[in-house]
Length: 608
Image (tube, rainbow, N blue to C red):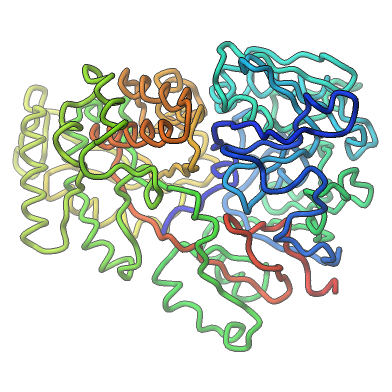
């Protein structure tokens, strides 16, 4: 079992840019314009490619895709960070560039048909496709791009941090927008700007004008393949394929965006949602529980072949996931590393994995677990050189001891780990009085709340709570709905939460949003742990400005090693297989190397 990765978690992480040498050949400035970007070498697809190799270019259009979502929603406006956004809004709004799922970090033109970057990488200019238009017929203009950038940076803390080195966007031509940077040589910035989602300025500034900072259930127009069709606030939302979609014949879209309608049904409980899936209420399910995957798929539709299930590694091949219980380091006593380390020792993964998780998982021992960017052993070579350059800012043990998580699973090991935790708490100024662990100076009991948005996670957290009680720590669990959970997380209003970070193989500026000092007090940032550490900041800088792939890998391993050494989080676990089940009403042409291309590359068998 692991917490479902949101679409945003996959999209926000980005890679450092290595500009493709192939030129964009369309007009007299062909020598300047690029049609695609990639981290290393050149993009795999040539300038004149017809479609991605992993799609079915003859896939039929039509039919319905029914999906589930959890919690509720109260807004169709994706710009401000507040509010519970409806699932599926990415079907309506588009970005300047779009990724290929059979390459690690390549991007190809979508709203933009070309870009150019000066030699010092002080800016990037994107050129819009002449055909690009919104669903109301209005053209997508450079003014829309500037409006979108300014709005996201002002109103959404996540994007404000992500684009913090992008100082401004300005119209520099009839179809051109130039983004200016506050530094040179940051090879990632042109590519992350290409991920900018574009919104209709004229819709917000119409008559009457609409508040771009406010939640709304009014149907916003976009430039994407779908339009918002029907909205039942909090319970369901349906998107309809736009027959007049401007980009249907673009190479990146051929064979994709096939369903006539996409409908999201909302459930307050995942167990209820699974029963609805079994009954055929919706079409696609991502299984997060190992025990249910092993024993819960014996219903008639499975036996009759109406429901297929697959465990595929594709979406995780280029992703390292750190799933963890995250104490809020902004609050005492979690600001004391000895306390955090004690909490790590109290988590008996081996026992929980055996008793609650059917021995189906591996322990997360890196923020890039399962990838070549994970640190291991003692630092060597360039990684050691990088750590030496910040020696005064990082824990001394990173130089002479490998990061190792405590191992439990037996009574002897579990007892020894709790004894170690008890000793660490004593060093941090706590003592046992009766059945309570208290601050030795103030007498205040050590108690905290673990905030969850999914009741099924309690099967893992409850054994942890019991272990904490053996130490005299009073930990309680509180489960709230998705909207309330997100609001509290956005405002850092929690003691401990269950969260995850999905890391790509080309880390960069997003690291500031995860652990940088500047994001620690930014509402809506993903610095869930509340990290503000000069050594971490220095290592992020080295990642962002790495001159080559070898240096990027070494700097990433150094950052991974230092983050683990600080015990900022209690590492959990995850599977390297992505478990999916789906009704035979939908199908796919095969999976790309690094994804499922879902739902874009799938189609309805009822439309054939």
